[in-house]
Image 1 (spheres, helix red, strand yellow):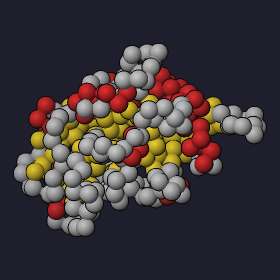
Image 2 (cartoon, one colour; image 1 turned 90 degrees about the vertical axis):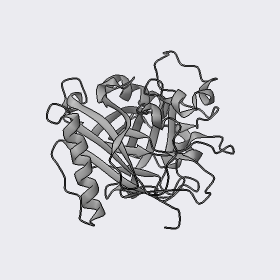
Image 3 (cartoon, one colour; image 1 turned 180 degrees about the vertical axis):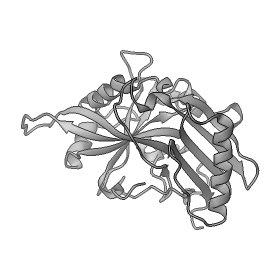
Length: 295
């Protein structure tokens, strides 16, 4: 993550891309959560809360996915787009609760929101998310001009690839335009602000107003807005040591799918040779190698 990661609270969204929860086998966890809109995300979960006793571990690693210490836990990558946002609160002072007035995205980037799939003891989504010092990863930040259809995000897509121990990279998740998220632009940010003000402890979800209180009403938040659908062969695949993952958010008006895959191969070769990864304009790329817990 970027240099400010120690100060920025981090959340994720569940169910903001059609059929992902079903592929991940987690739709049943939300069976009792009622939404006014059938297409709405199911909820918001924290995965990194600075100074928290349970979620305070710095779980970001832009070079490696580090598997849990418990080797029986099965991990899937989750290719996503993350937004770095400013949180604006109402000016009205309240001894009970400060209300979020707006969530304003400033940057977007590639993100891996890797998750444990088989933790039968987890009662909250967050317990499946911060499982090691390499649970999450972020690509280079891209500045947002305006978070609307007339802005930069409208011309970007997300693609993801996997290589098994040095073999050719193949698609891991579906290549999808960012605006194909169920909720995006103002519909998304207004929904997030509402959830930060109203979401209570229910089922697998947590009390978000209380988390904001405990975090001292942070002014910045990283919000991972939902995983895309897996390619069929990877719906039931769990990461193995030596796998290589690449998640790329790219300007689809400038780069073709073939060019993106060639870029991924180039990034992998560079990193395998120990050279630093260079930035490419119009690209936010994340490349991670899967490692054992004590590697």
